[in-house]
Image 1 (cartoon, rainbow, N blue to C red):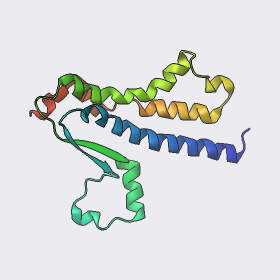
Image 2 (image 1 turned 120 degrees about the vertical axis):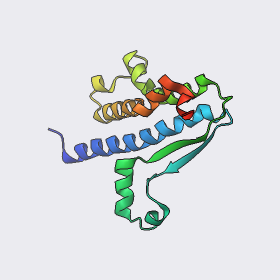
Image 3 (image 1 turned 60 degrees about the vertical axis):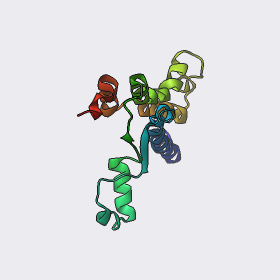
Length: 151
């Protein structure tokens, strides 16, 4: 049986890894686009509310937005037609790099936290790998590329 402190520390590591991983996931989309003339906006604690509603934010509404709407949002505001299709598709799948530690553990390059009985390492590894999974919107860009902006 694990102590309450151990369980609390596992929960804190899980939440911290998820929060950082989600932010890194979104920011990794920007890396390939930064080498092009694409224009994008990075928003922290984005919301879909109007400017008038945004003035009434409290700590509770900010927390609700963070939990339900995301911590970071990257929005492409202008994608030049000269941007290569492979750059757009690469930007959509680049967050898969967050699964690299899991692949290195599976290949035996990094120590296996499960085999070592390291609960904190296991939780961090699984959470980080989960953050690297592409969202449905990411897959849409992979399959359809920049044609989604032509409609």
